Length: 87
Image 1: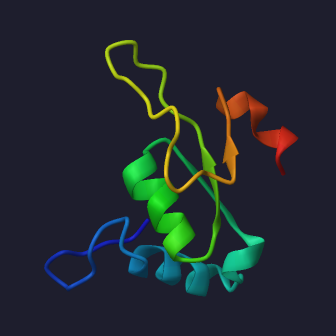
Image 2: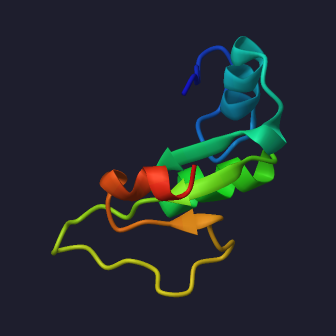
């Protein structure tokens, strides 16, 4: 994902990094799913930009994860190996 604080492009959850990636790929937001592990940046940013979200919370025993996240991700997976089930 592209961001450039010095150039005025804020990081996720700002929508501009998503918009730039979509423009570079020439794909519409509604036909795109963004997959990653951080709810506050990735799921929130994807939803704000009109993309579907696939949230894969990291398996880090010392971290707690949201049990009722807002916004709700389009898909929540336990592992990236499950990704084909939602594509």
